[in-house]
Length: 208
Figure 1 (spheres, rainbow, N blue to C red):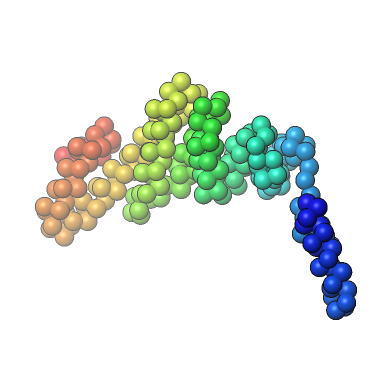
Figure 2: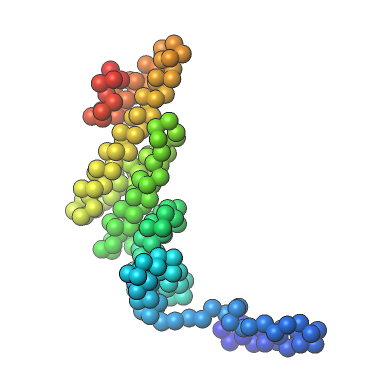
């Protein structure tokens, strides 16, 4: 901080000679607050429904106090606030980073759950690409395998199966497209894929 301040003061002093307007040092140097204070401010804003400000506070903890216990907690809370605001990619990034850094912590399963939920909320109609469904399936499957005793497993299974059903639905939609155009071999491959890969979905009977 002192090196930056001295450098800026020299710049400001030199600027006075050229009649440049005064520059507030605070615009260049981020003010730091104690990690616990920032974290509690984030919680207070979250409880008040001020999600955007809460997210800023949690991100400030991680940025200003990267190796503190509060930074670890804030990473999960930042993922949660981004998810609640519909900032799904930011939520995925924060939660995935948490899982990578703290895979054995008590909140790791929840962070993975946020990853899955963020993909789940972006699943599209079967007429469109189903990459979000595939990623939902993968994220929830990872949660089930790595944290089988987690309280989130039951819902993860439900959302995993929904995603699987969507992927099967996409295969059916493409198969019907080929069938309508009498491209029977291509259609049969899609329907066979539903039977073999997506068994126990509601599409199997039609595929057969």
